[in-house]
Amino acid sequence: MKVLLDECVPRPIRTLLPSHEVSTVQQAGWGRISNGDLLLRAEERFEVFITSDKNLRYQQKLSSRRIGIIELLTTDWVILNRMSQALNDAINSLNPKNSYIEIQLPKHF
Image (cartoon, rainbow, N blue to C red):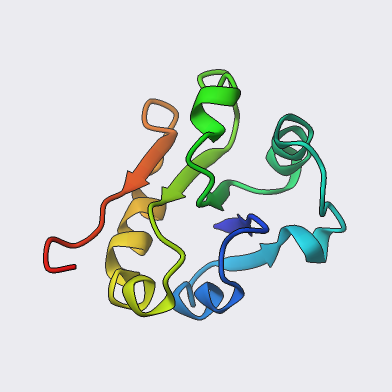
């Protein structure tokens, strides 16, 4: 899948997604664009948007979006690295009826 990483997501996360085509907001030239405009642009070129912005789902009407959104509850690289399988599973489970997934932190953290 074509995945876009938000500015707030650590770039090394792309190494955890080897079977996906991963780009960053900065690579797309969309830095500092408002969330609404960013999502409009992203849904034209990407299938998944990964963010750690906990307010996104409250600020934007996500039910009409044509892009899957995954919210990470942390940007801590050590934790994210241990959650790589959960992240890949979330990407693979996105569908029109389940277009927003919040990745929970493992219980041992």
